[in-house]
Image (tube, rainbow, N blue to C red):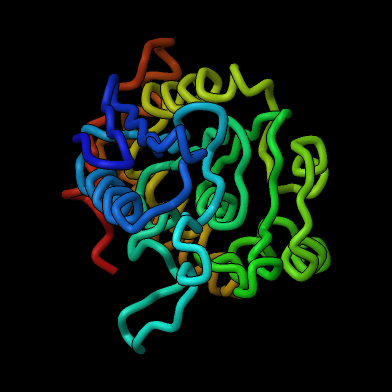
Length: 267
């Protein structure tokens, strides 16, 4: 899959999605949004994909919305013709782990897209911020939901209401980054994590755990227990639940056979 503003590659069950406008620091366009949505849907649907990486070409991850139209960038639009979601199928809907390999600056929409991912590796040299309030608009791409659950309310308020930028080191302190690395190592480390997931974890187990993890903040302990129990009943006794212990005892790589596409829980 290849199209304007975005590249898609699939190797060894790891999909790498690259925002591809390096001359514009990968500023986000409508074409990029359409491509990213299509790529995420493909990753969700295809069992050949076990883990997903999103990264940027060149020295930035994404510098935010393309503002080349100047004053028209955030012009009034008709109701129903615009969604602040940026893409209709965000990373947290994908039933595979999504790793943000943030190889450089991630500003505004660039950072809010990364916040939709499960794991975020940030370049130490990068500059980061949810700066929309300094552009006359407001944070987007589900940021009012993702950032408080990732960083906590007080830190989310500090980041979103000031619109300030911060370093990779502070991103780690704030809990936004899972890890910080030199920019040149971010994608390599993301690929290593993705391959470890693809080789060693049961795809259906990961998928149901990811879904419940993203739902968890809205659920009570009792509801979590009910959901965990129901999902365990779905997983226990299936081929992967038999294969996992045997592979461990026999000290060999597991051979998973359950598939997200055909074995997904019906409720």
